[in-house]
Each structure stands twice: as structure tokens, then as C-alpha cells.
Length: 378
Image 1: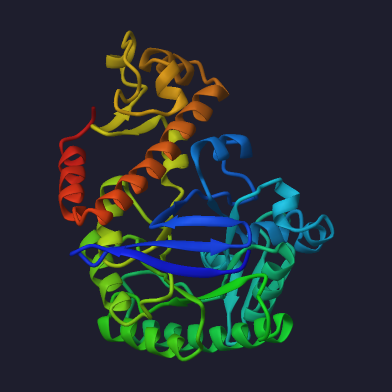
Image 2: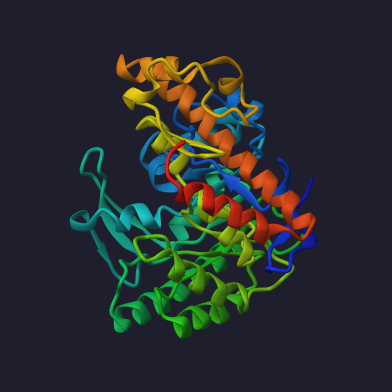
């Protein structure tokens, strides 16, 4: 099975429904990708992910490079074989992780020199190295190394990061093509990442520069890092207005349940976020009626399922009272069950979004979802 992306339907908002075909399966878009940083989605087995209907997950170049090492993963048959995952995998470049190391890294035009958070050993991550690692991992979609900056950022800082991101993308693309060949079916798709902070013209310029490199897909990076949701949507719209319609678009690191449809309405096809798994470990459950903070005393004898409208195996079997007990007792099972439910909620919400797009009703769905979450907890 080779790579392709086909648009199936559009919505008056600008949302798109599509089909992304990879060597490891067909993915209906827009899609939410559970985050499996170290080749595992925390709290879930691969069997559970399959039961939930996940078709693509995200893994992290930085973490897998440091442990167990990309060459070991290559020798063991690649990431799919190593983690026994039949679906597709997207790997990010590790850029966000090394930039978040703050005092442990130094950025130059060559790349990022950093010290491992595990043992303090020194490493140099270049655009070519990030591409090399991801080719060794054998992911279906690989991200180029980009320069992430904090927001709000001074314009001159954003401009410098934009130029470096483009230069790095050019080097990564050259390395990738030299090691995969331009002819025949590629074993991996490489995506460029648009930067530009919260400046409209810089976002537009970054998109134009990356379009010239002819990536098969594009991501919008450097957003959802503290700026208001409205700004995230505005910057996303500026970028998607310029991107090639026939190629997939990925908004990195989003989002909250009530925000997902807003990003889809801006023409986004793919997104990822640690929120459903992280919130689950902190006893926050997402439901069709809002958030459930399950450790609250009000649930001590609550015999209802977490979400009466949910079809996941957790809601079919367990009560709020039982989940509250597990969290209060510090049982590992609490996080496992909560994670299962939250990931199901995100995947099912995206399924409903795809249906809404097919009927031209995304705005109605998005409005109803926002209302439920603005009213508080269930």
C-alpha cells in the first residue's frame, strides 16, 4: 500500500473530510493522533488502541533516540515491529523537546547541541540527523527539524527562527531525498513545519518558503503554547489559506475537547495532544456533558457510568463511584480506565466531526460542543 491523500467532502466552514492512505493502513481525516512519546501511549496497550479504533499514533524522535536508540530499533525491524503496532505512526522531529531543555541546549545554524535529560551526555541534533533517526525508526510520516520559540516573541526573534526553520527544512529535504530516492514509492512521507509565531505576514512567508520545497504534507507548529485560542485559530487560518489543497495539513499539539472542531473548521486534517492521557492520570474525565473531576466527593456513591452517552468499554462496565475509589486508593487501574475513556472520547468526537462535515453541519456541532464545556462539569 502506497501513500495518498484524497479529499472526500468539504463543509461551509472550510473543514475537509478526507482519506490518508499509508503503508500501514487507511486513516479517515480529520484525525486525532494519540501521543505515544516513548513508543507507548501511556496507560494503553496496543490491543486497547486497536479496540478504540486508533489508526495512527505519534511517537517522539528525541526520546527514542536517547532510549533505546534508533539504531537498535532499526536492527529490531523498525518502530512498528519493535512496539508491535500495525497502524500508522507519525514521528515528530524532537525539536520541541530539545528547545524546551532551556539551560541544557544551544542553538546555532548547524543545529541544536544539547545534554540528555537522562544522563547529561552531549548530543548534536541537526536537520539531517533528525531525518536519519526517523528513517531508522521507519515511521510513516516524519517531521523536519524546526526552531520552536516561546510566545509572545519579539518580531526579530520570530523572523530569525523562520529563516532558520526554512534553512533546516531545505537541508532535511535534501538529506531525505538523497537517502530515499525520488523515483518509486517512498517508504515514508516527510512534512514541513510552518513557523512565524503570532505574526500574520511571517506565517504567510514561512508557508510560501516551505511550499517551494514540495513536501507531501505540511504542519503548523509553534501554536497552542500559551497564546489565546482565538490567536491560534487566526494564525492557523492564515497558513491553511496558502497551503496546497490536495495535501494533508497537521496542527501540532492541540487541543482541548471544545476547541478541536474550531481547528478542523480552519482546514486542519490532523492533530495530536497529550491532554486526554495526561488529564486522565490526574482524574479528569471528558464526557459529552462536560468535564468530570472524578475525585470530587459528589461521586462517592454515584452509580452512573462516566458518560451515559459513551459506548466505550469503561462506560459500559464501571461506575463513577468505582473510578473515584480507584483514584482515592492510588490504584494503577484508575489511570488505565480513565485513559481508555478519554482517548475514546477524543476519537469519537473526531468521528462525529467527520460526520458533521459530510452533512455540512460542523458549525452547529462545534457550537453545541462549546456550550456543553462552557457550562462546567457534569
